[in-house]
Amino acid sequence: MTIYESDLPGVGKKFEVELDDGERLVIVTHNTGKREVYLKANPDADGDKLFEVSDQLARKIGTILEGAYFQPVETEQVETMLGDDTFLEWYGVTGESDIAGESLADARIRERTGVSIVAIQRGDNLISPPTPETTIDAGDTLVVIGDREDCAQFEELLGGGTESE
Amino acid sequence: MATETALVDVGILFTAVALAGVLASRLDQSVIPLYILTGILVGSNVLGELPALAGSEVGIGGTTVTVPELTLGGVDLLAATGGLALTDTDFVVVGAEIGIVLLLFFLGLEFNLERLLASRNRIGKAGTVDLAVNFTLGFGFGYLVFGGPLAAVLTAGIVYISSSAIITKSLLDLGWIANDEAEPLLGILVYEDLFIAVYLAIVSALVLGGGDVATAAGQIGIAIGVILALLALVSYGTGFFQRFLDADTNEFVVVRALGVTILVAGIAYALGVSEAVAAFFVGMAFSGTDHVHDLERLLEPLRDAFAAIFFVWIGLVTDPGLFSPSVLATIAAAAILTAPTKIVSGYLGGKIYDLDDRRSLRVGLGMATRGEFSLIIASLALSGAGTGLAAGTAETIYAFAVGYVLVMSVLGTSLMGYSSRIEPVVVGVLERRRVGSAQPAEE
Image (cartoon, rainbow over the protein chains, first blue to last red):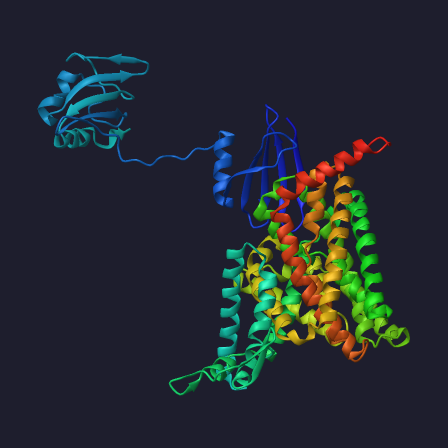
């Protein structure tokens, strides 16, 4: 794969990229920052213009091609709705949480908040469904079902130890 | 002239330019010939003649028509329209000067000596073929038609120099920029631009210095001194220019660049050196800094606006009456002679770059366009009227150059546009000749 580079005085620079099947991709970078991209069917053919883009957009496309394009997606807390007002939520438990170390029976989660814990993710294991004797450890991820209000209460119960994911 | 009138005049000027631009894009032509025609039309020689038309007799093809007096609501229409005519006011003249300065400043800015040296072999060969063929022909033509060596040198320059602006734009519009013919075309243009900078320095000294070498010698001495000073500026000034343009805002970059460029050009002009050459060197001095990109981006619209004024001014000071049958015949002869020579020299240039017949022909077709620099030489000839040149000769050369550029800019743009139809024919002929000739084809 050869890349030919040449100067275009008064215009900018030209890069010609050999593609696998004898085609060539021609990229003209203007002094103004604009990029024009052409495709030649073979080295002797005339270039067909594919598109032109601004400097900024060209860089973005370049990072996508490079496989380095990553933009963190800022979202609200992940919410999965089941039915009208029932949510499936994930909560992380930290060592600061009051209920860390208690069994489900002792923590009386459903009585105090109204949510049901349907599964506990501990490392690579999934405990589902948990029994009343199952203890809640720091580092667990609790999968709970409840309406919006119940979930908010449960979050409060976890207190400083919540870690929404 | 009252201020309010002057403002209206500038408004009319730019409106006319804008309309010409619309027409140019409709016709798929370069704006340059249309700007010149606009200048001729709105000038005192055409539009300004209207009030005198009323009641006069005009001969059209053997029949004589008396122009009626057109009045509307008590207003003489012809007189009113004629009142809109523009003259070459100070604004237009200085604007045209700034246009020349910025055109050459950009040449210098984009001129990269290292780049030129890197590909000097091919650019040098192709450019020298171009120079040898066209400059020589132009010189001979000018000597025969206008008489005298100075007129011949001016004609040689007018005929030799292709239009960087039009050709570069056509390359982009046609998509040739991605093809192999772009390199020899742009390479030859760089060679021409460098040549024309040196040429303008010498010829302006000859023209303004009074033509005879003895008087011009002192002038050339001053010119060389100024150019040496400018070269020193280019060599040692980069660091200074770098700091000089380290400004926070675009506004400061623009005013500083304009300030230094126009000031240096103005001082050079006052000393009798071509302001265009001075601007070229200032551009070169800036080309070493890392502000090139910003300068190009910020000054390009300014350059184009002032260059438009320059082309309109060219038209304004062109009296259509100068296009006598003999001048028209000269223009026709020059076009018939120099379009093919450019095509041939361009073709040879393409061959130097190892291109095939079709692409080499494209280089030739592309090079046929003449434009802004021929006009700069024409305005130089006009400024030498009465000193270096007889007034009549200067005016004739000027009219010739304007007409020639009008023809060649339209012809060159059309040749490029229709090249897909021209190529098969010419390439076919070339191949048949190769097959037909006894000698093996040289590839």
